[in-house]
Image 1 (cartoon, rainbow, N blue to C red):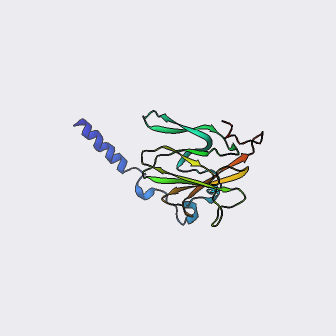
Image 2 (image 1 turned 45 degrees about the vertical axis):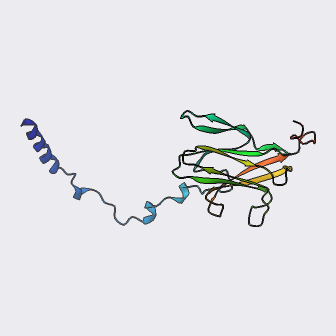
Length: 191
């Protein structure tokens, strides 16, 4: 009974306090831009840079390994990450790790010579796609030149994600350089 009396006194005291709803300060006639995202504090997404967002990590590499992860999942890890490759027939790998996703999709890579923009009509020199299942956290793309070997020069790889490649599926761009082997021979033939 004593506890009930204390509660009643507390309720009476609070109801008589000066913190009633009618006394809350209201802001009148505030301009709408004050409630919108400030453009000066946001950076625009750069489609001409390595992809962000759903990609936790994405790198170019000479190869990849498959390891058993701590959750007993198969994880793809890059071997010898680099952006410099030797001319020849060896593939270029793009190895990536994804943030959690709630739907399956495909990751596409389309490779163009650097001076070209990759616009309609430009020559694709290598391309690959990988289906990403719901449980996949890592993956890779294998770029093999259509003409059989990489020629020295700069290359640009457009990374797309979705069901097909279109203007809306572009996620970002990776770049790499292929240089002539120091002795002038094809390194793929010497092994």
